[in-house]
Length: 175
Image 1 (cartoon, rainbow, N blue to C red):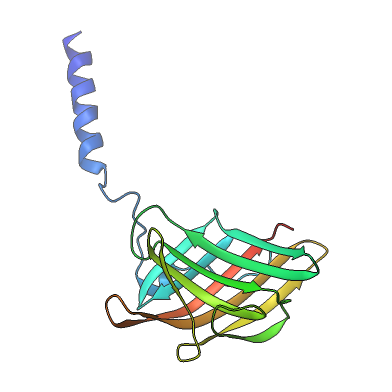
Image 2 (cartoon, one colour):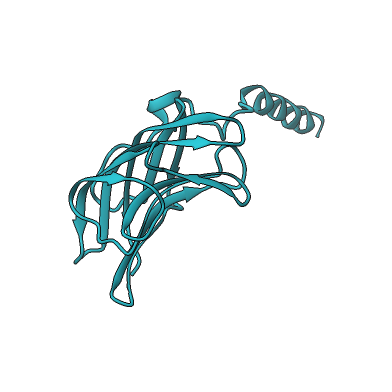
C-alpha cells in the first residue's frame, strides 16, 4: 500500500514537472501563427494587427445574402477578450467579385474593413484609410469564399493608425 501511494505521488510530481503552463498559447510568432491561405472552406481567418497575430481556426462568421434585391457580405472573427476584439470585411448592397476589390468607407454599395476594439467601439476603413480585398475563390454552388486582404483603420480615441496586413480567410458562407 505504501508503494502504491509513493508511486501515485511520484506520478503526480512528474506530471506537474512536464506540464507546460502555456499549453493553450500557440508556439509561434507573428505571421507564423496565421492559418494557411487555402481555398477549401477550411473555416479559417487571420491577419496581423500592427504586426501582432489575430486568427481563428474555426468560429469564423461568414455570410453572403440577397436581401430585397441587394447583396450583403461579411466575413470575420470575434473573440471574447484581447485587442482587438473583432476584425471583419463587410459590404452593404454590393456583390462580391473574384479578383481585387477596394475597401473604402462604410456606406451603401461599398466593401469595407472594420475593427472592433472593445464592446460597441469599432472603426471602419475610410477615404483616407483604405485597403484591398482579393477574392481568390467564390464558389456559389458549394458556398465557399476565400481571399486575402489588407487595410488600415484610424482610431480617433488614441490617434493611432492600425495596419491590418497579411489577411486571409477561407470559409463556407451562409445565405
